[in-house]
Each structure stands twice: as C-alpha cells, then as structure tokens.
Amino acid sequence: MTSPDPSVAKKPPRRLGLYGPFIALGLAVAVWSFVWLSLTATLERRLNDLRGQPEASGGRPDWRGLTVTGFPFRIDVDFTGAAWRDASGFQVAAPILKTEAFAWAPDHWVASAPGGVTVTRPGKGALIVTAKVLRASLFQATAHPPRFSLEGLGLTFTPGPGADAFFVQSAAELHLHTRAGPDNQGAFYVELDKAAARPDGVLGSVAAGKPLTLNADAIYSRADAFTGATWADSVRAWSDAGGRLDVRRLLIQPGAASLDARGGGLTVDADGRLKGSLVATLIQAPRVLTVMADKGKVSPQALAGALLVLAARGAGPTVPITLGFQAGRTLVGPVALGPAPKVY
Image (cartoon, rainbow, N blue to C red; front, side, top):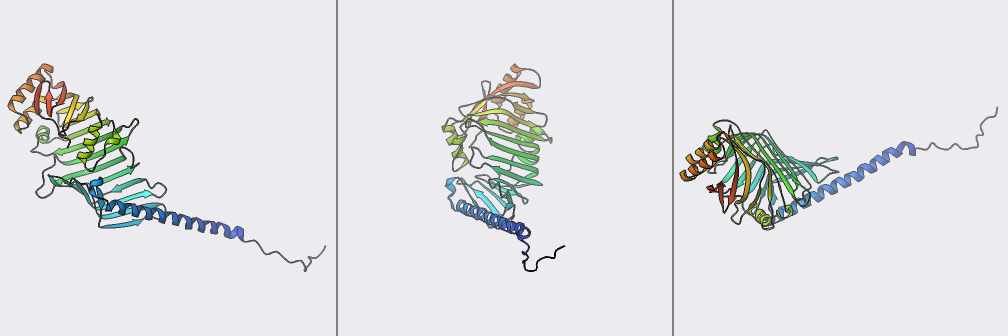
C-alpha cells in the first residue's frame, strides 16, 4: 500500500454547478423585469397619446389618476375618474375602472367597474348604471369590429337630475358581444334578460309588471366601413359604403306579448332611419297596437287599418307578418303605423 504523494496539489472543488442555477435565475429575473418595465412604459405612452388626441378623431379617454402594477406576470392598470367621450357629447364615465392583461398577452384586456358607470346621452342627459357585476373584455382591438364582450348582472338604470328616463329600470342580466367574421363581415349579439320596463312606457304597459326580454343577433357586411368620429358618422359611412344588416333573430318580449323576427335585411336611409323588412311572428299584436294608440304612438286610423291586416293574417293570438320600413315609415302590410325606428 502506497501513501499519497504530498507534493501533488489538490484541485479546489468546482462551484459553478452550485452557483450556476442562481446566476441563471438572477439573469432571467433581470431580463423579465426589463421586459415588463418596457411593456408598461409603452402602454402608458400610448394611453397618454390617446388622451391627447382630439375627440373628432373617434373619441378619447381621460382620467384623474392612473396606477400600473401587476409585476411579474400581469399588467394591472387601475383608473380613477375614468371617462371616454366622443365629438357628439356621448360619454361613459366610471369613478373606478380596473383593467388587467397577462404580460405575455398585452392585447387581451379584461376590465371591471365596481362603482358602476354614468352614460351621458346627447340631448337626453345622464344615465347612472349600477350593477352587482359589470365587466368587459377586449381582444384584437384593430379588427372590424374588435372582439369585445360586456356582461352585467343585477343592473339598475337611474336617470340623472333632469335627464330623460330610460326604457328599462333594471335587468337581471345584460350581455353584449361583437366579433369579426370572414368576407369583411361583423357580428353582434345583445341580450337583456328579466328586465323591468318603465311602467309609463309602451313596453311597460304591455308587460303589465312581468319581465321584459330583448334579444338581437345579427351579421352585417362592410364591417371595415363602420368608422367615424361619432356613432352617427360611423353609421352614415357604413351605409354609404353599401352596408347591410342581416337579422338572425330579433326578440322583443314584454310579458306574454312578443315580436320574434328570424329573417330580414336592413339598411339605413339618409335620415338615419331603418330601411328594409323583417319577417316576424307577433303574439298579442292587437293588444300591443292598442296600447301604442293609447300612448299616442299610433293614430286611431293606423290602428284600425293594422287590426284589419292582422285579422286577415289569422284569427289566433299568433300572427305571421312582414314589417316594412320604407320612406321613413313603419308598415304593417300597406298600413303605415308611424315613423321607422331612428338609428341616429
């Protein structure tokens, strides 16, 4: 047995394997911190650019305070006194608006307004909207239309001082979705479920204390043409480009009465009124028309003529009918009930 040679120096233990993972982790944290700070700085710069643009360019946001947090995996942007306003005077304002996105998907945002929102309607005044839940998401913001969803649960609608009343006072649920489709098409879906209509309005009188349900599902062409500084400008540009709205379903159901349309093409005339036709099924139509006449929405002559048309279509409570919108008038058969619905 030989003894070790003391003249041979021992090699010091290699510590790279011990410290290497910590060094790599530190570098990764430093790089990701730089990326996160760059993303948030770019976002704040873009927000301030939007804040400084004129309202005539399509509306602009504003706020009193802005806080950016969420490191390391989210970007949370919380606003106080947030508002968006367009050139027509239409405005949506929220005392608190919370928004967030994952840092690796900064084009997909979700938002909530825990304090509700106030909608300023030009010529009609403020509408205060509160809800148990009021949230939205936005994805593909440059698409036509953007991929947008809005959900509200337990909503109330209260006019501000001196403002016009809204057609509903409350609703159990509100859903709104917009999507871009192929061939330059856009789609939207709107649902208002278990709503309480204003008692002194036509829908409230027809509903007689029962819930109101609204449902609209439609596809429209020339989606890229729907742009403008205001809603009216956007609709006008879309109409001038030959845009057409194809109704997949339109349901208006106050209580036991209903209008259920499942087909029809619509456009908008130069005065901002609907033009085209809807193929619909009406339930309790005579009662609805009588209420409209009592409210001054339909003349006695138009009521008498429309009742004759409905009687010719069938004697039961359910009547198939084509509703026409021509020359600014709403038609049941050849009878003009009144003005066509105004889009802007």
